[in-house]
Amino acid sequence: MELSGQIERITFTNEENGFTIAKVKVHGRRDLVTVVGNIVAPTPGKIIKMQGEWVNHPKFGEQFKVAEYKTVIPATVYGIRKYLGSSLIKGVGPVMADRIVNRFGEKTLKIIENDIERLKEVEDAPS
Image (cartoon, rainbow, N blue to C red; front, side):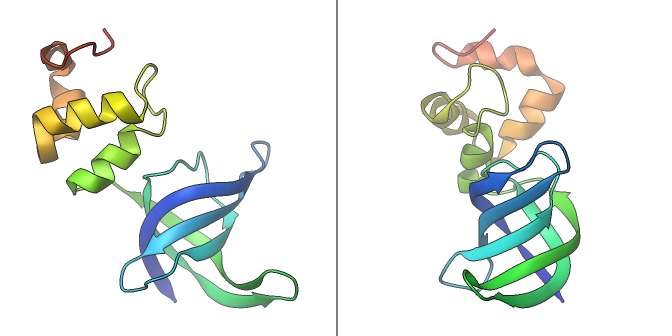
């Protein structure tokens, strides 16, 4: 089965082996989905397309067990804001992410990748 969604928060991660428990906002579902499996460097805002299966944990209930996944670059302003605000870039937290995304909108990630000097256009942006 395939699910796609955006990581909202990390409940647990083992940096040695990548085992992660995360809450994911899945397209078409109202409630967050608990996702378990090996996800490298999970961060809130990261969008992932997952292959796996639904399992019912005796203590924690319904979970999606990830067999494999791919990272998808966020395309919406909300996704980019969440992605940047997750400490992806040193010195950029939620407030600075808001400023950057408010300035560049959906082009934010392309600007960071191709013309990072333009961040100087944003007040108090890291240099």
